[in-house]
Every structure is written in structure tokens, then in C-alpha cells.
Image 1 (cartoon, rainbow, N blue to C red):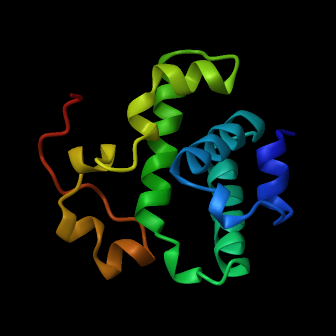
Image 2 (image 1 turned 90 degrees about the vertical axis):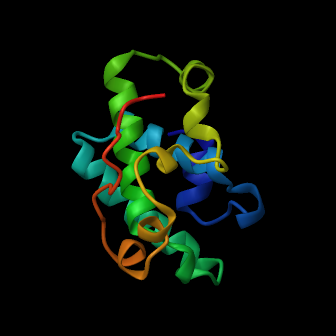
Image 3 (image 1 turned 180 degrees about the horizontal axis):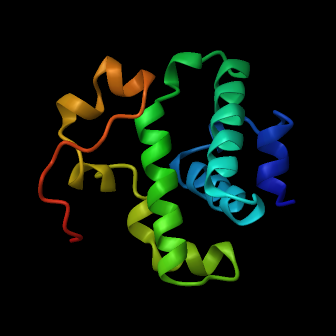
Length: 132
């Protein structure tokens, strides 16, 4: 198991070292390790909620952002094979940028940052879903 994943799961990773690129890396590792994307999603959601609670910030968990990124990472993995994190990160830099977020292509701010989207996965509300 990857050291980042181990430290994330055993809660020894400080929150100050777990930023957006590390979220993406853990999700990528889970998608590689688990038997199905559903298993990876379940593992990521469970551990992300646990990590946020452990660090005193359970309100930071956002269901739509979490699910949407996992689906996007999975899509990118299917489009091109990468044997290591460094090559995946290099070829998918847009997934690692928090602001502006790739999710702005799919969601309006009103929908993405709504209470509903925080609690449950909400489908994208922008009709122009072409890749830029």
C-alpha cells in the first residue's frame, strides 16, 4: 500500500499535508487497488469522512465533489493507462488544480455549493459538457 494511503487511513497524516492533489492521489490509488469503482468510492468516502471527523472538520466533507472527482479520475484511467502516480498526475494536471476546478465545466456554483450537493451526489447542471 502507498505511504500516503497508509498515513491517510491510519490518521497519522496531518490535515495540513492533505490538500486537493493528495485527495486525487488517494482516490487514484483506491481505484487501482479495489475490485470495482463502487468499492473504491465506498472506501474513499468512508475514510474521507473519518479523516475529516478526526481532524475536527466533519462539515468539510462534500458528497458531490467527492463522487464527481472519483468518476472523472476513473474516466481518465480508462482513457490512458498509467503505471505510476507521477505519470498520471503529469498527464492529468487539470484534475489536480483546485481553483479553478474542473468541476466548473459541469456545475454552476449555485448547484455545486448547495446544501443538497454537500449531502448527496447531484448530477451536473451545465448542458455544455464538452471537454475543454
